[in-house]
Length: 259
Image (spheres, rainbow, N blue to C red):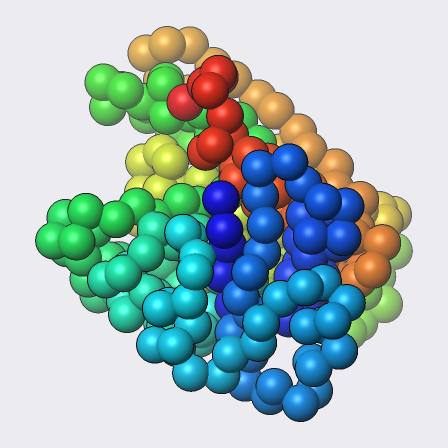
């Protein structure tokens, strides 16, 4: 499958290395959409790609799918046009907290018969949540995220501090760079208005730790993920980057597990 990549940050470099540099068997990144072509010119020869600054030319290149690896603003401005021509994978899922954008995307998917893929990112267990809610009988979903204190607040603290306690819809508005997990969890489950979120600043942890608690007619489930940072960029979750590669591989796999 030929991929068109939007963005040239840490996740994009991870994908270029793992797919193109390591010569992936079924995946290849062909095109890269950036704002400044000269800044990233070296990537063309290094990874065998073509750089674009024009969206339409990028979409008309020989690609089967667009992978957004930029930011929320890129999703808002580029995704609707991309969906008219290609399947799209969205990494900056916080953009989908915008109900108008989510509605527009839903309509475009129906009209143009293309797909939107949302990798699980820094969390897991989304298939469990979707299965448990197949009959709409999940009654409660709570995400408790614990992050190093220095990454959330400026003050020095000795004990953990609750930075936010409320619903996902408000969490993503107040912490747009920290709460992508709450959005993908909400979309897989009971929605952003009903998903409970607690965000803790903890001076005693050096990883981002996500605990998900689910209750419903199926019973109860709890799972915890402690994320190591991406070696190339400590602000990015290693698991979030790997979830994109894993999703791309599953799309093209013949054996579908948990889908």
